[in-house]
Length: 283
Image 1 (spheres, rainbow, N blue to C red):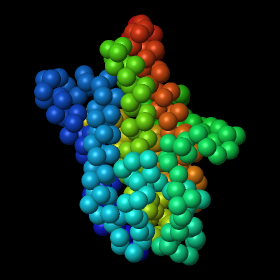
Image 2: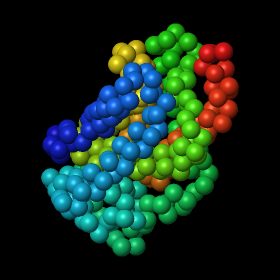
Image 3: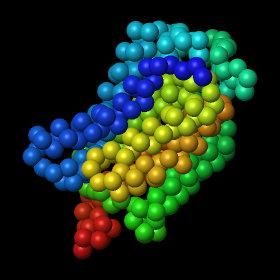
Image 4: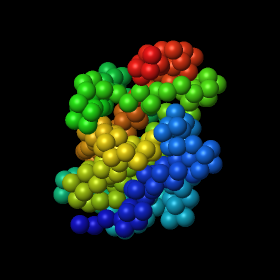
């Protein structure tokens, strides 16, 4: 099985960054990790930006994405829209079950990623997003039942209130940076780094889900397991669809909707802390 050896550094990179960032913030604020969980959106946005910068530097230095190892070969001319990663759709990658090493593209086929977010068939995009939402919610509910014996169960800390102005900023920063960073590293770099179908799908999907175990970071095995199982079904589905040639714009649209929904809930609880208190059962 051919693969890019650097992938073993990049795939776990975000998980390690989250652990380090939360631990560092805990030391600086002199608070327990459980007391800073509501700042997860700020830490996540910062790590997203770091991830994007790292991808930009690596791809610029290597002039390939992933580095030319006989699997996929890319050129710097395809930094679509100036984005620091390579995401391809069915229109510009010709994949076959037998051989995934040859990439064919033309200047006409190169389209800015942000342009793709609003292109294509609206109905299919809507259905695709709906499926992502259903798989995501189902995964969270099932994980909650397995780990906590509650159905439905959602970790209330994920929508804990923050200062209102930060909650507003989250809507514009978190969804976009998360989508660019995660799709860049786990799909554009991760899936494309393997020739084996099962490796290309399940290895990136594993690390894609694993990073959520540390958002926020709490050294509690039940919580870590809950977060991992919550996202594993969705990450497997996303990696599989991408491997099979699904348009990255559909995946990005669905991912944006999921993250925007989360940030909107945080806005609601931030402007109405009493609502969060009722939801979390603290009153």
